[in-house]
Amino acid sequence: MTNKIQLSEMSWVETQKALERGVKTVVFAVGSNEQHGPHLPTSTDSLIGEALAYKVAKKLGNALQAPTINVGCSQHHMAFPGTITLKPETLKGIIRDYCVSLAKHGFNNIIILPSHGGNFEAVREAVEELRQSLKDVNVIAYTDLEGLLKFLVEFSAKHGIPASESGAHAGESETSMVLAIRKDLVNMKRAKEGFVGRFEDKIDLVISQGIKALTEIGVIGDPRKAEAEKGDEYLELWAEKMVHYVRGQISS
Image (tube, rainbow, N blue to C red; front, side, top):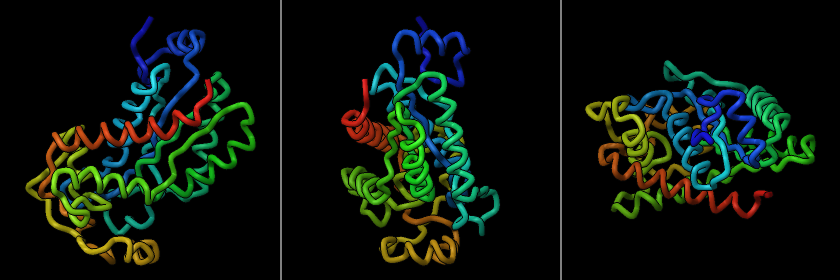
């Protein structure tokens, strides 16, 4: 019996054996490739999503992790080089095809974890459609963006980091998590304070004009107090929140 849980590292034989012994739950993240300030890589959301999905699959038990979708809806970041974006309909189509493939192999619990705010609406709409077309499959997604931002701020608050610094994009919270995952990709010498006002009041501006209308460096928050140890804790707490969310909805 293999201890592997990542489909991308398993052969078809190993996957088939897992299905035969009753592993019918699969988890994957929907990330992005977009700017995250001058100090973080464009893969930030995908790195975080990959780590999160792995932790959730492990904590759920009897579950596998499917590869992260690494490009999402990032139109509001296109003023910054390196950003790659998909139209919402394109992302929805990818998610639909992805889930149909998993369902065909026998997975009847498909857990989707968007790790980029711009993906939440497309994920929600795709899941609604999949629930109509995949009648025998339980497709579950966490699509409460406000709830996600709220508990990420709560995690940082435990360390005395205010919401304005924890940030909604490339601030202390995300920077700490990437430090925990891939410290080699973080350049803290370039970490600078970005927009630290009330982001809730600026969401419409960001959507209509792009994030550069709010911050010249692409940062919402202040990453300078980020630490890998805090990032490890944030990922654990986030994973626990997601496990609690899906356990009440998952089928046996």
